[in-house]
Image 1 (cartoon, rainbow, N blue to C red):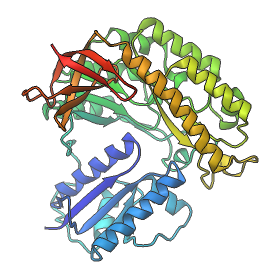
Image 2: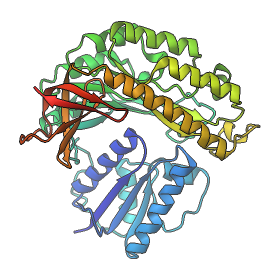
Image 3: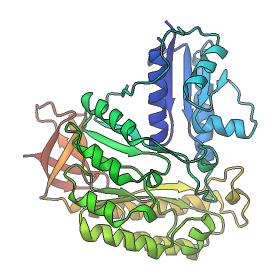
Amino acid sequence: MTTFHIRSLGCKVSQYDGEKLAEKLCLLGLKSVEEHPDIFILNGCSVTSRASQKAGQIMRSVKRANPKVKIVLAGCEARLSERNNAIVENIDWVMTHNDDLSVKQMLSALSLDIDETNSMSCTPKALTQKTRAYLKIQDGCTQFCTYCIVSRLRGPEWSRPIEDAVFEAQLLADEGHKEIVLTGIHIGHFKPSLMPLLNELEKISKIERIRLSSIEPTEVDDELIDWVASSGKSCHHFHLPLQSGCDKILKSMNRPYCTEDFRNIVKKIRAEIPNAAITTDLIVGFPGETEQDFNETMSFLKEMKFSRIHIFKFSPRDGTPAAVMPNQVNNGEKNRRSDLVQDIWHESAKEFHSKFLGQELEVLWETEENGCFSGFSKEYVPCILPENGQKLENTITTAIGLKATADHLTVEAI
């Protein structure tokens, strides 16, 4: 039996796509293994040059360890190599799409026989044993931010039919997943809109939580905030990508809002859901970002008090306008600014976690390690519970906050 191993880098969409590809291969009679596969598939990420470099390092390492392995590059990194007509070393096949035909072409190119009597249609099934399951509802982006290569790789926007998404969600729930995370490249552009989908997902009895992944701040309207506030299954968590707290830089990035727009959305959320987690993405060292611009961002971050900040040092991507903009910031300055943002993030994270001291939280426990259970509350608070002799994995229990740090909240069971 032909064996394979898939490793996915990058965002939740990449993780989901990797799982769906693995499922299709299993339906064709291939076997997923952790070590010594016949085929190694890297579902690569291209959001930064560092991510691309990591993909190359992984593939070289795999080839050195197992010279006979067939290596396949997939995901955004595969599309980027095709776009740039790049010749990638150590690659046996570049698979730019995960559709049925592309899977067949890949197996044929690697001289692997498949049973044509097997159906190539994919019945949704989560292959990983996780408490949370990703549910991809949308792909593609037409926003074309000046720094972003992803919108140039993923193609036009596409929304999954509601009945199809609900069908997969039901299967995920039947397999024991307690939380569904709606993911996509631009989920706020889901058609016809998010609300009909959310209302249908709420009806699935075995789903206890519904969490939104990253959503553009301009696409968070009153109806969505009301749903998150009132639904018994919603997670009180909004990931709103800010990217910069300086209006001049936001305009240069081609972001569709200013800081005042962002501020007003956050005010609305916190007015209706005071303990909601608001997390974000931020780019430091964007071309033309002066010290004054950066200080404006720092002031805005202090005001917003994000509970988590994903910090990206600007990485020029060939084919994007930002890559050729004047006044590029040097790497040393990017590192300095990243460290300063991290300090602010840790302060605001500890402050947010401290809100829950002495308060009850509903925690979905995910793993047990080093004598402690770890999991997340509805508000995306990372919780740690000393092992108490119970089996808590994939259960939701009530706990009380005891000690807050920037990294987590230590809790005790009730």
